[in-house]
Length: 225
Image 1: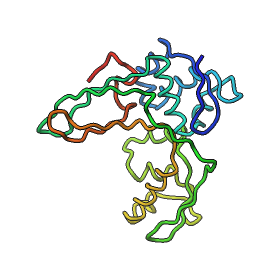
Image 2: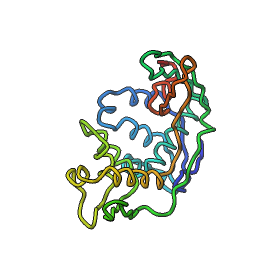
Image 3: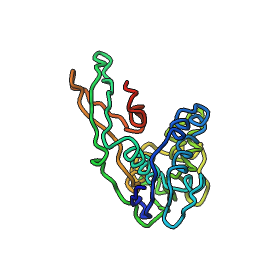
Image 4: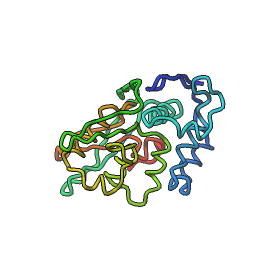
């Protein structure tokens, strides 16, 4: 077993992934519903704090930063520390394939603070927004939205605006200045492991940006783009 401390504080124990988890991660029905990773985490987390019978609900209750942290550590103990990526240059006139080697031990981890709810005053309108961290339940709801957008990603974290529940209309009418400030504040209080990968294209110098978990070789090293 492998022991780690979550960004939110509790200690967890993991076991390696097996063929059963590989089947889950390639099940298209579970991928579409957002349940594939949830079931893998529930299977492989042997202990979370004092809880030795971790359920799918326990996994959904976890903060998103903790969930991604566990997925990265689970990848490490199951497949090794290094991830090879072959991102394609976003420059349409180039489209060269680049090679990146990422050591998962080098990814920075930010711990969560003690607060779980936050109040932010919008700089333009002066309205007060109460919001929370993203967790597994909210991630699953976002995954099931047919056409998710910036507003839906923000609204799913907002509890209230000036004491009233948020709505699509409220978010649509919010000024870009206020929306940008609110997103920046949400990002500021977020925590977990940073899986952003950036490099310059070896051929044209264009900036390449991706996330480890979005690359197929993260969990399937034999699949290289």
